[in-house]
Length: 100
Length: 517
Image (cartoon, rainbow over all chains, first blue to last red; front, side):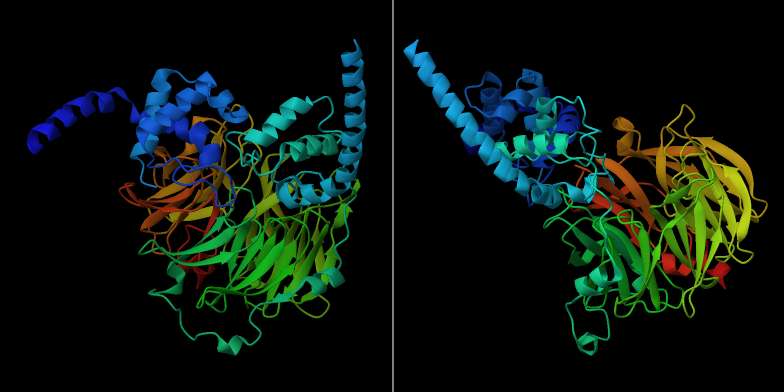
C-alpha cells in the first residue's frame, strides 16, 4: 500500500520536476532575486526573507499573487509583474531544491 | 467645491509640515549618507569604488529613477537594495540631499586625528597564545578573504581566514566596514594587517584570530604595505591626500606625507595615494601618487627621506615586484602602459604597452623555459581585450593574449600550470575566469564560477585555486589547480580580494620562493 502510494506520488511529482528548468531558474535567481534575497541567505543586515529550501508551492503561490497584485508590495509587484508562468516554475524549482 | 478648497488647505498645511520635517531631517541626511553610502561613494561625495554622488554628477537625473535605484540596488554591481533598510521618507530625502549637495572639500585627517583613533583591544600581547589555536601545518597555508558584506558594512563585513589545505574557516575578524586589503608580516607569521574601505587598519593576531589594535588612517583608499623587516606599515588615502608610516607593532603613526607634485603635463596637483609596497630588496617603501604620476621611494631611516621619480605615467594605480624586489612594475591607467622602475637606481627603466587601462592587481610572474614572464591584466575598456605578457629581463612585450573581456587580477603559482585571470566585463562574462597555459600562452579553459567572479588566488602549495564569486554570488569557490574541477565552496557575504599568506615567501604570485634566496 505504502509502495503504491509512493509510486503514485512519484508519478504525480515527476512531470512537475521535469517541466522546470533548474539551470534557467538559477540564472534568473542569481541575476535578479539574489540581489535582495541572496542565494542561500540574504545579508544578515538585510530585511528580506530567505528563499533557499522553502516550500515550492508556497513560493509559486507568492510569486503569482505578487504578479496579479493580489498581494501588495511595491517592489515585488514590479519584479513579479514581468515573470511568465515558465519563469516562476524555473525560479521556484531552483530555490526550493537549494539547501539553505 | 467647498470640499476641494478644504482639501487644498489641508494639503498646503501638510506640505508646510512636511517641508519643515524634511529640512530638519536634511541635517541628519549628511549622517545618513556617511552611515550608508560613504564607504563606497566617498565621504566627500566624490566617488570611490562607486560613482560620485553630488549636485553636478546627478544633474538632470530623474528623482524617481534614483529612488528606484536606491530601493532595488543596481544589478551586476555592488550597490545593494535599501528597500526596507531605509524608510521611504529617508530614501526620498536622500535623493533630494544628493541632488543638492556639492562635492565636499577634502576633509582633514591629521596625525593627531589618527593618534586619537587608535584602539587597543588586547592590552598585554604576552597573554596571547604561542601557537595557532587551530589545526594548520604551516602558517603559509592560510588564505585571507576580504568579505565586503552586502552593504559594505555591518555584520557581513569581515576578514575571513581559511586553511587552504582543508578549506575550513579558522577565523573571522569583524571589520565594521568592508575589508579591502590583507597584508601579512614578512618577519613574523603571526601578524596580519587588514585595511577597510574606510581606511581603518586592524592588526590581527593570526594565532588567536583576534584583532589586537586598530587605527583610522584616513577616510578611504586601499594603499597599504609592510616593510621587509616587519617593523613599519605605510598606508595612503584617496581622502584626504596623504600617506602615513605606522609602527607595525603599536600602529602608532610616525610620520605623514602630503601627496602632491607636478604631473607629467606640468600641472601641480594634489594626489590620491595609489599602491604602497614594501620590498624584500631593501628597507624602503614605494608609493604611487595616482594623479601626480610620480613614484616616491621612502627610506626607512631617520626622518624617512623621500626620493621622487617623476613622469612615470598618467594616473598610476597598482604594481608588482620582480627581480628579487629590485624592479617595480607600475600600472598607469590613462596612457595604458605599465612602467618598469629600478628601485636600486631609483629611475624609470621603460614604459611597456599594457592593453587598455591596466590594473595589475597583485600581479603575476612566472618562470618558463628560463625566462621570467610578467602577466598584465587590464580593464579592457576598448575593443581589444588582451592580457599582456612581458619578458621581465629584457622588458619587452612577448605576447598579447586575447581574452573574453576586461580583467583586473591575475593569479599564478610556481607549481600550477595555469595563470588565472578574472573577466570583469559587466554581463554574463563577469561570472567567469579564464585560464592561460603558462607554456603555450593561450587561453585553455573558461570556468563559470557564478556571481561576479574575481580575485583568483592559489593556495601556498599551488594545489588549489580560490576564486571569489562576489557581489550576489556570496561564496568563495575552490578548484583543483590541475583538473580545474570544483572542490568545494565557502559561503560568505560578497567576498572580494583573496590573499595567500604564501605571498610573503614568493613576493609576487607565480615566482618560486627559491628564486628569492
